[in-house]
Image (cartoon, rainbow over all chains, first blue to last red; front, top):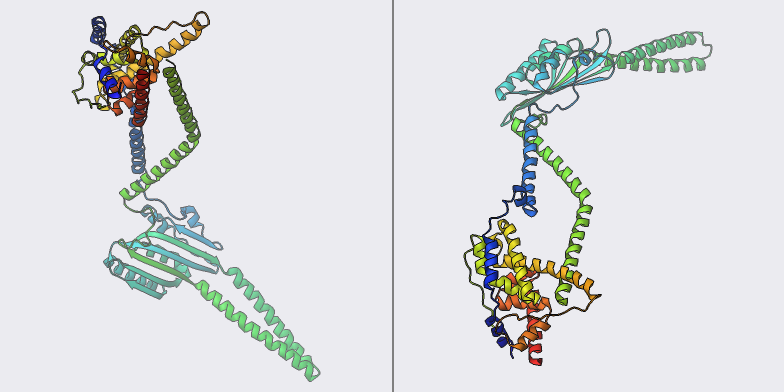
Length: 345
Length: 169
């Protein structure tokens, strides 16, 4: 008997259900279904997972966007804020104050611009970065700044003015120290403050030291002059005159040094940078449109969510691997058991 | 030997329709698997009882109703084999098992009946699915939970063994 003959015979003798069995089965099949499965049952297993993954992703995205929008109300503050009280008390040795860059705080910064303390020699330096609307406003503000310097008895050390798609003006002004705070206040009003920095160094101690040293040298010169008058021999006189000449040279240096220090204390240096709104190079980061800030925040939240997800995945990975191995082992054992059962029957 | 491909048919709208169309297939498969008509009929009833409970999960896009019913029949039969194995282990100590070989189908020659009886249940089920019920390789693989290649291998071995036994007798 060939294989083809066996196949033909097997197909010809295909088993048929008896009438009794057919009736029984049809009775079963015609029964109403026990109950409609619940939504949970229908979403069981992989289907539920397939629904949970996009739902989780959508939730994470929605949360990021919501947080981004809710936190985008005001631009980020950059630099060290200068509280009004701290600004008022400025004027002691080596103080440096940076003004807040926000427009809301600009008025406060203008009012609170610190100046040198009267009666003390101080080196005063201020740096201002302002934003103006356009190149016309830039030109006006530059002219106004130069006028302010002259009005306060100061002068312009240097000016660099450039316009194009974007406009910038940079100038160094020197004004009398007594008018420094006034200059900063008036210059601050020329535009929106992007950054403000005031540096005050005390020079009084240095001047007092130079004065004391000069007195000592003068006294020494007087003593040497008296000694020269009393000298008997020419060699001794020549040696004392040499010493007096050195002391006089030292005195000249001390006078020059004192004059330079005093001059430094008499005038203040103000560095003023102006730029149009289009010139974003020096703009404070985070001061873009609300949409930009919202996107930045949303991306930051998404990145944070990604980090958390990664951490959770790393923590869960060993358990998932163990569970997968257990599932695979159970499946393999079941398959072997089935094979044994079918082989033995 | 030629194994015909099944004709694509419209999916049944109810279990009654599926039972009407595939009752003989389920019974034939279970009869080849168990070698006992009475047991096969009991398991057929059990299969349709189970199918009634699971009918709402039937998805025609994932396979035909015949494949789905045969899969349930196989699970039902395996549960029966397990129970039978436990029962046999308990009873073997008291009395030797009594084997009753039944006919696989009306009109089979005694040599083929004997040859089928000498095969294992695993060999008989692949013959039932691929030869008697004429399922294609993929559908058979889905019912048995193995690959199509494994189905071909099992079928080839079963046929060769059956041919040897028939010609020996």
